[in-house]
Amino acid sequence: MDTDALTADLLRELRATRPYPALSLTMPTHRTAPDNAQDPVRLRNLVAEAGHRLDADAQVSREVAAALRAQLERAADEVDPRGALDSLVLLTTTDAYWIWQLPRTAPERVVLSDTFLTRNLVAAKAQTRPFRALTVAADHATLWIGTGDGIRAEETGGFPLTAPKEPPNPQREQRIGDTPSLFTDEETRNFFRDVDEKLRTVLADDPRPVYLMGQAPALALLDEVGTASGSAAGRVTKGAPADLPPAEVLKELRPALDEGTHRAAAEVQTRLDNARSAHTFAAGLDEVWAAVREGRAGLVAVEEHFQTTVRVTGEHLEPAPEGATQSADGTVREDIVDELVEAALDSGADVAFVEDGSLADHGRIAAALRY
Image (cartoon, rainbow, N blue to C red; front, side):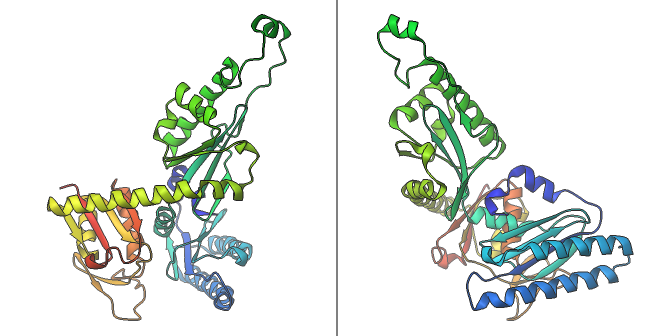
């Protein structure tokens, strides 16, 4: 699955407590040759390690271990190397599995627990800045979901929508003297009200920035009859948007997406500047980690490719020795940044990934505190 498929409902499902063991497997992958040649070998080794762990676990019956191993092997066989990004995540139970290829690296791990390991999914989704786009015409509305790397039409909340086709009304034409304008006709207005209502419902269930695309009269009518368009992150005036393929939709949206990214980055910088002035600012992994654990972080800003391994000492984080890997007792953590991002989002904080180097003076991560 792509990160844009990680809806709020699916994340709740993945994070639910399950009968032990729920198996999570994560590993870094490579997008291009020759490095990607090693990925299938590493995956087979991790699948074998998972099998050994299941066999050695006294809490896992032989039948459960066999069923879980079979599901994991099915998942591994289904991984498409052509879709490889920066990491692979397999989540497996005895009767289901999920495959995620993520544009954010993750450490090599096999975890048996009563919940899935979701921190890498959550961090990857936050980093990709997921959005929605609504393409609207007089008789059709399509909702798209995507990231900066791709977009796809979404079948949710009643979308795509097509206006009911009304038969011609000669008597009305004789009375008025002409056919009504598309965007003043009452049937079209009712259709746009329906579009607005369904868009509001979708965004309430899974909030994310939404961009609008359509002819100027169509966007104006959407503004007039509803309220969902008022929060749009950007607009693109385009004729016949319903006929565009996904790649063309993304191309047309690109300037608006770039503008939205720049605007969001400026807003993050303003919030951090204000926090420094108000002495409600934390910088560096250890300070931000403490603020997040205490629920004091209102905004966490992280450089795009910041990943580090740390040793947990008491209530503090310290750099781990070079070459250190995740320890069984949790004192050494390879994916601490992803863990911090997930915890920040859980506490209600905003999380923003910013350009590499922009937080170099603050240890590559900073926070604006609530108090």
